[in-house]
Image (cartoon, rainbow, N blue to C red):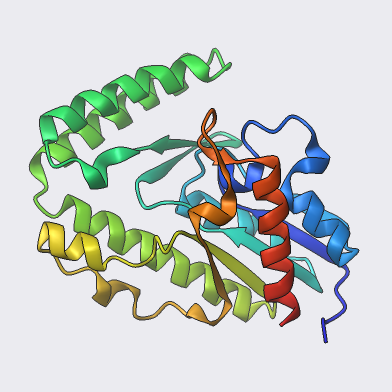
Amino acid sequence: MLKKYDSLYINGCSNIQGHGIKNEEDKWPNLLSKKLDLPIYKNSSLCGNSMKGILYSTVNDLKKVENTLCVIGLTFQDRSPISFGNHQYNYSYNSYEYINEKDWYTKHFLDKRRYQWKQDNTKDKNLENVFKSYANYKNELIKHDNKFETNLYREFFYDIVLLQSFLVSQKIDYVFIEWHNHLDVSVIERKRKIELNCYRTEINFDNILNIEWDEMDINPGTGHPSILGCKNISEKVYDFISR
């Protein structure tokens, strides 16, 4: 029997936020809210959100909240946050795990930096300087750290463990959503000849639901779940919670 909660908390990246879907009621967190008959206490999901960003915002949002059900979509390892003032900004590395050419990746990252700065509406010159310095730091790290990808995954997995530990310590029930088995690193280990699985052994997979790409019904125009995909996801999450 489904436990009675007072509210629903949502966090994650654009797969949660509903990128490309105009009507809020068609986004799957709102569909889930209706199915569970629970108001959404807060939806902190952001396009491009990093795992550490999700960790920070969840701890901040839920440190004084009781009897809420927490549903979080796990984001991807190739993103990192910058905290500045009262805001948090995220960088997406995107295709690094599929690209083994550091020169290509360096160019891609710098292009991404220019794009993301252009998208930000702040005129704070100090933030612009921080963005540029951070991009240069990452650029040098990528070029010179032969363990860059290993370190990327290790930090990503540990952020998941830390988030689980916080929720358990606060006695908050939670469901994490994994997209297309992206926590399974066996293929990457074989391709890269690196050891990654040892860093995910502390993750508790009991409350992690995997959703495959075909269940998401990806909209080719946005690369994100369609309205039908959102309906499918809400049903999968509801069934997982009700099990």
